[in-house]
Amino acid sequence: MAITTLDPKTALIVIDLQNGIVGLPTAHPAGEVVKQSRVLLDTFRAHQLPVVLVNVAGGAPGRTEQARHTGEFPAGWTDLVAELNPQPEDHLVTKRTWGAFTGTDLEEYLKGKGVTQVVIVGVATAIGVESTARQAYELGFNVTLAVDAMTDLSAETHDNAITRIFPRLGETGTTAEIVALLDKIRA
Image 1: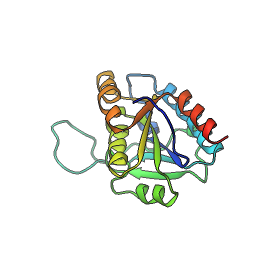
Image 2: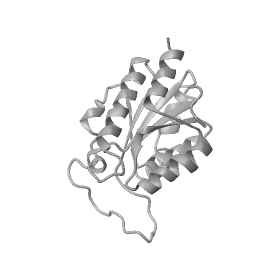
Image 3: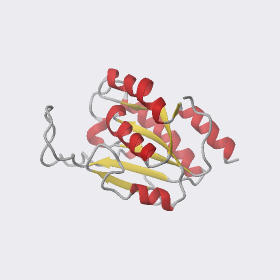
Image 4: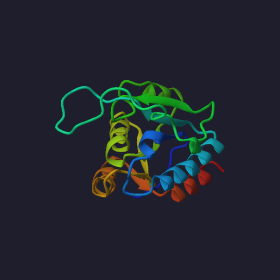
């Protein structure tokens, strides 16, 4: 469903825009994702709405068929990209699974701030973004996904998430559409 409204208490969740991930080859230029995310960050901050910056520093335990990283990450790998311009009032979450709610204080933080809706952006569309959106939806938050502020390592998985999964979890829109709605309801 295309974006129709934003709740008065909406938070922005930025997923895994960190040095080690933004540097990977992606379906759409990561620089553009960072740029659009920064527009949303600036708008949410200007409206004094909660901002959550998420990085990943591990993985869930258990066997998988696909090889995955084990051990230590290179220096700076988990650092958020400088373009996000983290602010003291931003809430930082370090996750060790795909979704930002598992094993973190994210739900408690958002509910403590009276948040009823989240806008989610970042990398990777079908992993960190989708997992966090699924969890948010299951926890009762209204979910909006800024489709021009996300990308994946695969165009196929990115497109599948946007066209098949996200419409079942919430509303989708562009950065410009979300900014226009925020400006309208916060005027």
